[in-house]
Length: 310
Image 1: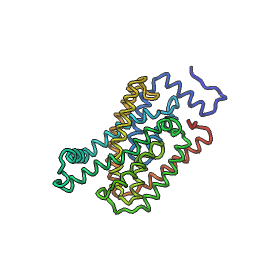
Image 2: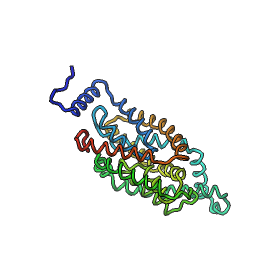
Image 3: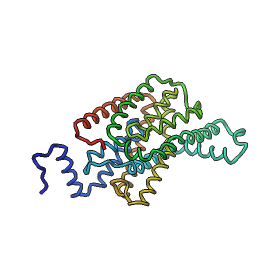
């Protein structure tokens, strides 16, 4: 019979009990399913999926950080949802981009729409460069320092305010045909900030887009397209590393992680469809309020010792 001691505080009781049930019933796959749902729900909203995985992990059986490897692999599922939702756009971009490489005179003879698609292909590459460089050189911070819940809580609040300011005061006159190489790089540096859980890839890039004067739909569309090479590259790198090492993605087996990834795909696809309709007529303010509330609650939990920072 499993019991808790009278002297235990509530946090210790919860964690000891959750650890028991983790051992008794093998909760790994159930935890993975829940985290897959969380990943799918939050990847495309400007609230930071990596922060949510980090926070939710503290309240699951075992009370552990799911880790950067699990997070990166499950993001493959949500990026596959992007590929499905934007399949026609991505197909046009790839055809035009490869045509511009294969035929020297292509730029002179191609229609305006095809030239814009080819430009978008190059701008996605340009915007990906910052996160590749920073992500490669900052691995120790990504797997350690950046996962402190003190930092997560702080950036949830700070970048929530940044998103609010950009959405309210940013100009709304540009669409993606106005996107330039300097703007692509600025989007890219904003995306690189999302290496810190709590910043939010979509939140940072959308805020940058709004600051540069792009309308909500254009900023969000480029944000989603820009994430494809970075997230898929990171996810498959982590997947091959996990296969070559212990067969684990952090605290989860690769089978558990695969289940979470499939679930993240299905949930993420539904969220994309909803969000693209939502932002055509509504602001990002509800997400800002949510970020401020979540960050504030997390600071209280950290201050009172309910959850540890690392």
